[in-house]
Image (cartoon, rainbow, N blue to C red; front, side, top):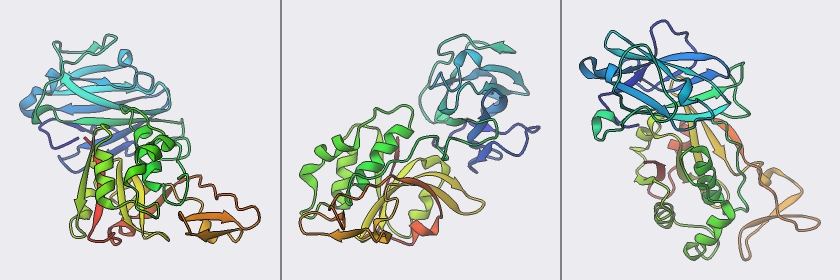
Length: 316
């Protein structure tokens, strides 16, 4: 979702809940929520009234069925009605259509995609429970605990791939094998090696090395979900996935693979003889991380550069 002459906007008569603005255009939104079984409208706006030539497709036909999408032209804009079919997340892609008026979309892709800035826009749609909640977290994707004290980078990429509906999943154990040759001697990984590793996996990810003064520019809805490497934890560096942002309260929701915290569990102790690990005091079994979705202030991340800055990786 980059800058575009085409954008989605909240209908004037819509209620206050269920539409997340991004500030790129007056009233423009990057995400909407629909309770399962209900229908909500969204405006699709193009320059000089060209919105009536545009249509959308859902890339997860189970969550929002293309056959259920309806649209009608109104004042040079397209009013699109979406029905929540099943709890989950889908992305709406925009394209050109050959028809006008109050029509029902046929089954299958109704829109012909075009390239360039003109059509560089999309909308995330979350279908929620009837009360507006999702199953346990903002993204509807269960958290992932890291396999050991050094595997936050693998847990986050594995979760990131599961959270995006159009990516091929790679398990954390597979990532561990793929990345074995670029670890440091203590099992950690440099930001340079981490960036190179992520970008070589052919998962459509862009990674930027970001200085402390520029990092706040990445905490915007259009970058979600993004992986961030920052300074934290007993090993100095750590990795999270930021997947929700509330700009009104300057807070984020993150997938935290280091949960629960073994350093606060008196039944475990830290050893760093060969690899850094937390071991049970009695039977020396490894501590098990479950992962969690946590809400934190944006400043929790922006004030913690690792070395010269941060690594931020986002969808492309």
